[in-house]
Image (tube, rainbow, N blue to C red; front, top):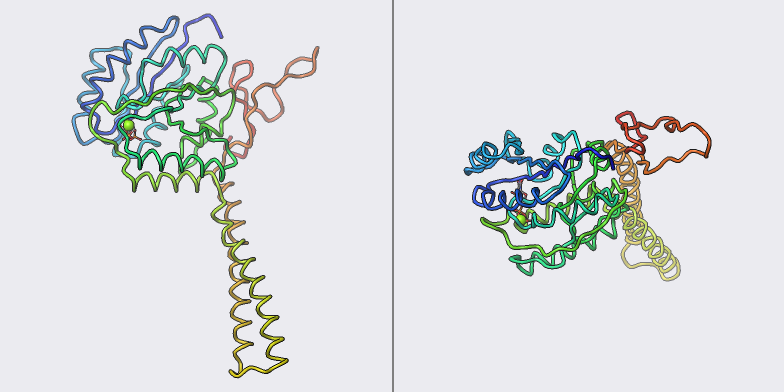
Length: 341
Ligand code: UDP
Ligand code: MG
């Protein structure tokens, strides 16, 4: 780490948090003051609030020169609001925090310590959740298990968006421009040195959660379809299974008809044809699914990989690896990828 003051921007996405923000800000302010040698900033993103959130934010910005504001033209949802906020940060590290105080700002110094130890992605892992019903806990638990199995990208369980990203992790994240943004997965995709900080998730300061069960269900679907093409494979497996069963059954009814005849003329032939075609159709759909899955992966235009360290043989002049994109620092988030990277 260099000697000059490093910047840390706390990005807070808020929708209708007029009541919570005035309670959150003093705590955030106190936490930032406790950091030594860090230029702490705050960026509030108003995600199309319909209450006094924007006015509250402006008041906070007037009273505190470290606060910047961003207002989206309408409600885009938390994932996009966060993306918009992160895009505005062009220097230093970022820390993502919920506006409702569920992620305690008092933990920020702990996150920063880990960053100083050299971690790129310091994320809060919830050990307890206050003020959330058992349905939400149970569904959240199940969701993390399912996505953990289906996705090839490691997605830490019980980890929300409460996290600190080092400058190079942020630079890497900014290269992921896919439209369907499941942030938890994107953070996981970036990789680098990750560490979890267990914490107690508090109850909301005010207001109520914007994520009802229906929204959570859609969110889960979004996550699974963004980070896995497993559902597309279902047709292939069903198809192969049906085709095999149909074949076995076909052999059985044909042999039966040949040996003893069949009381209903034409029935064996018809059954065999229907079953077999059904199986073939499902297999064909599955095949299309496979290609669709590949097309989908390509369309996301993610970098192919990110480099953590590139260490050329001793005594040789260090040159960036052909095709890599050095971000100016020693081992920056170098990426090689498709045209977009
Ligand atoms: N949020 C947002 N846009 C939305 C919904 C929520 O920016 O469309 C913000 C919200 O203001 C809060 C954070 O995302 O700061 C988490 O939302 P919430 O507390 O409702 O979710 P939960 O903690 O229940 O998962
Ligand atoms: Mg909340």
